[in-house]
Length: 301
Image 1 (cartoon, rainbow, N blue to C red):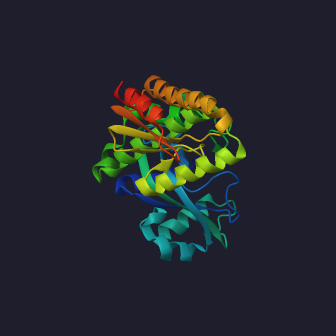
Image 2: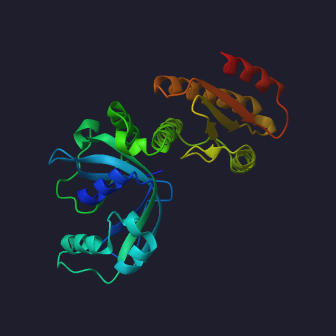
Image 3: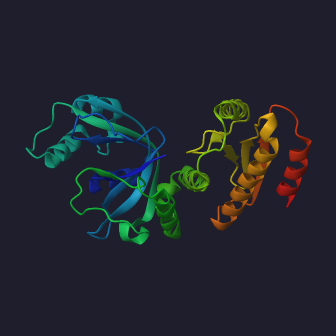
């Protein structure tokens, strides 16, 4: 899961804030192809000036869904006010103002974004220990060198909270924010464990067990992991991890499994994840009486 900061037109983003927009077509003057390392579900943070200051900060974010190329008129006909303006005329004027030659490009790129969340106050780069070039014209990756940065941004935003006006339109923004915070915290915890110590045959079995379980029980994969999945109802966090082994290494794999669960449990506590309880499930091809006993102690402890 990647995150980027994208230079955003203040007037357009305030329009979406006041309208309580949940979906946005985020237009770009360029018609070039998409990002090299940005995928569906990743977070695009709006980098713009706040309402009462000249300093730029991260004023909210949305989930990237896809990219498309259209003419200005096609973009308006398809997305209307989701483009951030009341009329085609207003949008055209904004595009002309942003363009270096003050003309509307023949083709423009649109980024379709969903699950929009706005912050009460901007999160400034310095507040989370990063630097963004003042002359940035397009976008920059935030977590390429520091996987913890997205979590730090969300935690900083949480201090002031979700924008009162946009959140009053729906209960969704608060839920979306909590879910994103949890996803990124779990991604960070998982990344700290490093690569799975499984052989190729074991890894294939582990992936199959998790994939089938996740589909059946409506879990989602922990970002950055190919073996672990989770689900949450807002109070209870459920994590499922596979247990696969060869006859010669069963005892070693059992130790690694317990180490992984202990790591999750410890880091969930030290990271302060907003859940009341964490429950673990071990996925195996056959019944494992010992893991059942150990899990009961872990889950009830």
